[in-house]
Amino acid sequence: MKQEKHLDLNRRDFLRGSSLATMMMMMGGVPLNAAEENPLVNPDGSTTYTGQAKPLPVGVIGCGTWGREIISTLSTITFGPVVAVSDTYPAYLKRGGRLAPEAKQYADYRELLADENVKGVIVATPTHLHKQVVLDALAAGKHVYCEAPIAHTVEDAQAIAAAAHKAVNVNFQPGLQSRSDKQMVNLYNFRIKAGIVGTRLKARGQFHRKMSWRFSSPNPDREKEINWRLDPALSLGIVGELGIHQLDLINWYFGLNPLAVTGLGALVNWKDGREVPDNVQALLQYEDLLFHNYECTICNSFNAEMGVVYGTDSAIMMRDRHAWMFKEADAPLLGWEVYSRKDNFYNESGVVLGAGGTKQDTHTAKGAAILDAADPKSPLQYSLEAFLINSYDHAAGVADFTAMFGGDDLDALRDYLVDSQKSRVAAATLLDGYVATITAIKANEAIVKNGRVEIPENLFKLG
Image (cartoon, rainbow, N blue to C red; front, side):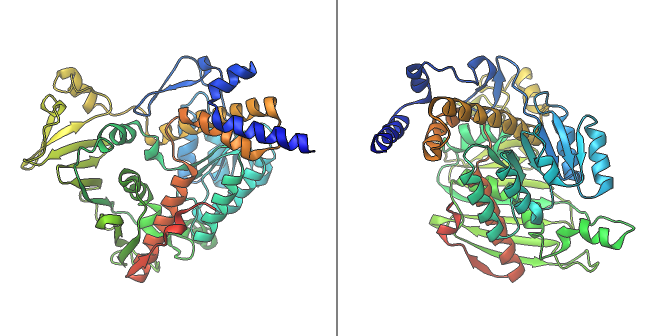
């Protein structure tokens, strides 16, 4: 027994002190995810392939509007076959099945989880139903992609985070698409991190789209069910359900978690019996008096969706997956901006920050075409591709470890996987999803309260 313990300690020390490649050479092992089958991860977070990515058969739980969008997007990804779909509403299940004709259809998601052909699941149910589905999926040993926000209460978010952290054998990814979007990843890696804004001052974001946010049904019970977003007991309101991606983007670009949030909200236009405000504003405060002023309305569409990060040297505006830098007159010369293309906005000139063109060709016709061209991949496609690739690689890493050491020591397995995860395709982590969800929950709480809500620092910690 003592000898077993001694060997176990040596194994852990070895794992902590060695890289994955070194271990594989010393053990004489060949990774199951061989190099020719893996994506090459570029510095900007985009990927290229030396071979076909291995398929990961998935099941989609929730075939509503967004669930069907996910199924449609997966149909464009050759290594993400949809082998099962599930929804409790027969009409939605049928529609989801039409988009994935080869998939098995399950009215009960637990039957989908029992399907051995399903290796990963996409959870696209209403937010308040996420918890039990995710917990059951993790317990069934499935890789999980959970739409954001991951939960509608702090307690549910903590339960999901605890279970996902404990489930070392599988990959968990929250659906924060910007974290995988080549445009946003490039902007962060090569512009934001480089400090081109100077000393950070503040951020501003908005979501403006006139829409009722209500779905109709001839069945009163069904209408209530599909309009869960309008129920304050089940929904995080427009700031959480519509704004979470923009809230997360600023948390990411700031590299900080908010300390407090002050909110205002009113029901101005859609007075149809709902209680959820249709016009809101949230002021999120970070350390060093850094703040993010975010507004969201479904009563007006002017100026649509955008975000701006302000600094002492420049401001960066993000809109429609494009970005522009507006420099201050006294800002230091960066060099590359002299050759970059510039677009005019009213009386300002913005330097185009594109993920496609280089600093040498952004002033040429070729560069202009690159920057003007719409990215053929949507943020959702980038995000789902990342989930599929990372889940396959995660499973391969677990298999490698188990073949060499057995599968009993989860702490050692976790240490082993840390090194392999350095080559992950850019994607939101469990912590990213948890922090974004807590941010959205507290922002909505402040809006409902029409006041200020402090956010304890330890609330953002896992475990």
